[in-house]
Length: 256
Image (cartoon, rainbow, N blue to C red; front, side, top):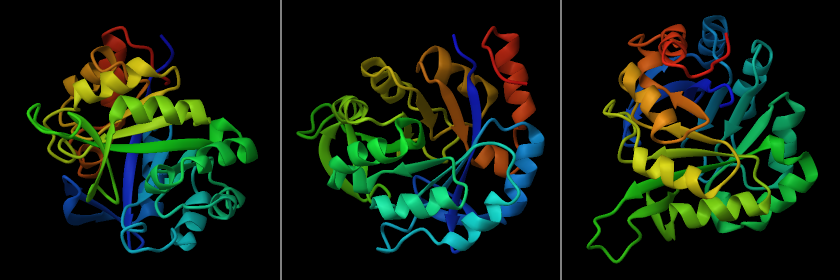
C-alpha cells in the first residue's frame, strides 16, 4: 500500500474559509493564508482550496487569495471552483498552484479533461466528483453525480463518470458525498469504494469525517488513497498528527 495522504479542505467564499453541512448553512472558519500556514506546520500532505460558489455565481475563482496562499504554502495545493477553460487553469498554475480541480465544467464539457491533461499533464488535473445517494426505488442512479454545488442532478452513476474521467486523462479524483458533507457521521464508504473499484488513479475520500475511525474506514473499506476533511480540522476537534498516528498504529503507511 502506498502512503495515504491526509488533506485539509478549505472551502472559500468571499476570500474566507467557510464550512457548512450538506453544502449549506455556511459559517466562517478563518483566513485562508493563516489556515494554510497552520496546516503546513501541522503536517498536512497537501491542501485543497475550493471556491465553492464560483460556479453557482457564474464567475471565476478570485485570484487574489490564491496569490497570497501561494506565497506561504510549503506543500502541494489544489485549487478548484469556477474553472472552465485552459486559460483559467493556466492563470492558476502561473500563480504556483500545483493542481487544478474541475467539477461542473468537466461534466458539461468532458473534452476539457482531455485537453487539460494534454496541456499540463495528468498529474495536474483533479476531477472533483460530488455525489448523492438516491433510494433504490428511484428512477435515478443509486449513486448519482451532482453538479453546481450539489444543486443539479446529472443522471450519471458515480462509477460511470469516474471511469470516464480516468479514460479522458484525469490524474486523480476528489470524491465528495453531499449527503455526508459536514455531518461528522463518516465518509460514504459505499460511494468511495464504488469509485475506487473502477479506476486505477487515486481517489480521495471527502465528506463526513468526524472521528479517527472514519479516516481508517475510508482507506480500509472505502479503498481511498487519501483522506480529506474540513470541519474537524478547522475547529480543532481532530489534529492532523493524531490522524497520522492513528493510521500508522493500525498498519497504514503515512508520511511523517
